[in-house]
Length: 245
Image 1 (tube, rainbow, N blue to C red):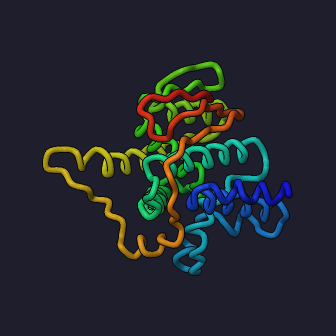
Image 2 (image 1 turned 90 degrees about the vertical axis):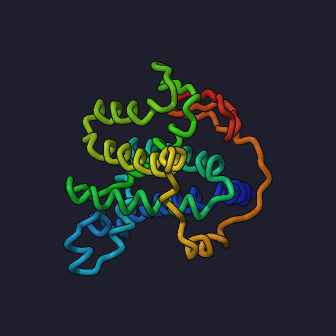
């Protein structure tokens, strides 16, 4: 019964968030069980275009390293902010949300060639956080109980946290850059004089995502209390919110 309840709760998670999170967890589990090797997953242009190992274009976004603090930290951010976007500004727009993933993934891959980046999952996570933060500018975020600031500063706080852990901030900067490009093209430029929406979701993608969409009534999104992120219950579309990290 416990497993049935857990499965039922998991199925309540929006389709894109559920699919991407499950893919990341299963990929890491396969590496942990030595069914796969990270060397089979990382992005390598030579292997992709010369050896036709095209799966690397996808798998490099699914592996966040071995089980440990970094993995769980990233998964928490992926699940939370991906879900808040999908249940908030992308509610009822599954195809548009998938297109955001595709746009971000393609642009990160192209820019990643310049910096010889092998795994881009963290950059995608930062992109999700960036887009959410810009669409929720009034949310006040409490960062680990130490700092309180407006949501748009959250991606930069995460970059600083990566720096404190001794990690390269290049991946974080890539996520912020791609997130800003998407935000500008989708939310800013269309509202400028003479501007128009440039990121149009292809019709075939809308048709493919129809099966993933299911009717749902608007409900208040309750964010669970957890560490390192703790969020108070808020409405997904409320203009003024508060959350704690």
